[in-house]
Length: 254
Image (cartoon, rainbow, N blue to C red; front, side, top):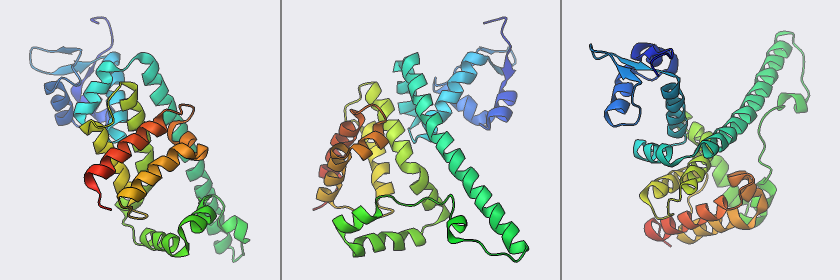
């Protein structure tokens, strides 16, 4: 450890975007121990600590509390770390492609408007996300319910829109991490994530107890949702369903 390159707490704060105060807090609670501390109290970090900080930030981005982050890091193997990182990378790449297409669409629109030209509808809306389940939702729940959901979407704040875009991904990744370490579905750390899931769901519609439990069962019964939630791991959707059932029975009314 002594021969490795080390970075001061100020350098790590600058490069990571994490404040020095936060890094000192992580040290105080045992989450991120510096490689060494100089006699004057200055903390220094080596690559091992930087990689651990990256994992901490990833898990925090998934909505996990610091207590849960610490537990996951202590029990996680290198293989499970790589799996979670790979899943997160896949999602980031999809977001990168989507945003890149939207940027190109906006650039094309600006260019056409500047030149006084017209655009075909397929070019105007190129890159925008469309709900592939809308027709099915209208058939299952009716036009009024679906239209009410769109009305809610139009009134979202910027924060709510961001939560709607990223919330389910955060839940799925967090649930996968907790399942990997064997956390029971009734554990408060799991139920905190289900609370987040319910908040995201309620941005579109507000399910009662039975409706929320039915939603969890649909995640298991419909292979499209099972794959979206767990990728190639078909056990994550049932784990999520069971956690949702406990949340519904504990917190929701009929």
